[in-house]
Image (cartoon, rainbow, N blue to C red; front, side, top):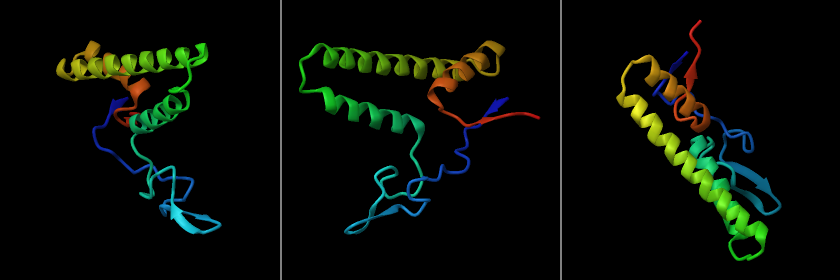
Length: 119
């Protein structure tokens, strides 16, 4: 198994089938999932978009669930930052076995690079 820095084939948006537009009662509009690009953004961007949607939903509330959501979002961001730092260190370690394993572990969660399976 190897990682590829190449982006590979773009991930076509299934909501608009790659056209960038969806039909509505008032005519075609930019697809809300891909922003009109026809291809989905990097998984890290999609995670951040979803986290921001959740943040907006709970930002004005003061109940305990809203506090728990804010804490959980902060923990998610902290963990993703730590994994990104780990992936960077693994890249700096070169072709060592430990560095490669660290990179695969971080990549499994962050999807930084496409994974190619060696046959």
